[in-house]
Image 1: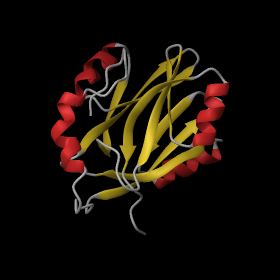
Image 2 (image 1 turned 45 degrees about the vertical axis):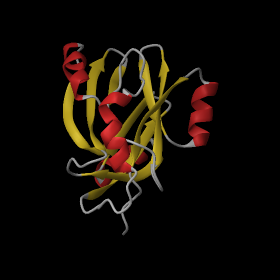
Image 3 (image 1 turned 135 degrees about the vertical axis):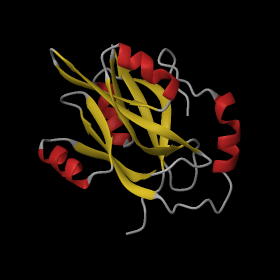
Length: 173
């Protein structure tokens, strides 16, 4: 998946093949991990985690689970890497989710630390997939899935940038 930091639009040319393959029935989900999109509107941050302990600590600290789905643990047709990045600022921590590996060096040069690939997200919509939208307010970014959280963010001045990626359907328990 490829997103331009200036326009946050999907670069369809890179994903034509991925989009086609992602729409085919019968794609295996053998490497699917549970994943949670968490948001703190108070601190204006979003994060995706596959670690239930991290999820629980964030929820205890007041974060909200905004979406529950899955990430592939390995690359596959129809999937792209999701990087988690962060940097300390005088006002706290800023977090980023990036699906365009070519953008990582630019973010690192801007002071972000790349935590690496947390997993692989779907490159196209599909049955049961959870759409994750990117919002922006000044230089800050949020990733949201829940309609009520999105409405609250819009009411607080956040502007929709578009679809950033899709989480796979949550793995069976």
